[in-house]
Amino acid sequence: MRAHEKENKQSIKIVDILKEHWERFLQIYGEKIPEDMRESVIEAVEKAIKCGDPKYGYAEYICTNCTGSEKKKVAFTCKSRFCNR
Image (cartoon, rainbow, N blue to C red; front, side):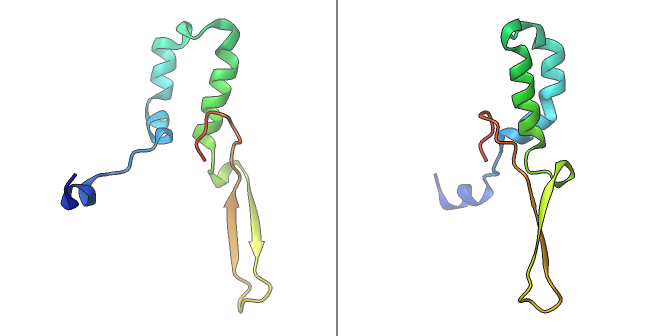
């Protein structure tokens, strides 16, 4: 791969694909997921989609040594076996 191709190459994350296509995938192929696995598959994928989004929970850290008490929010991860975080 040439240097300029590397610069133009866009990073694609699985979670972005899931966010965009998961609902439609379930509509079309949901019944093809084996029934005994369906609930756990749906749960794992939906956890991965929400992973790292602060609206689903976060810890807030405050620097006590900084001027102005700087704050940092760190979103919780899903800890799903399906997620790559």
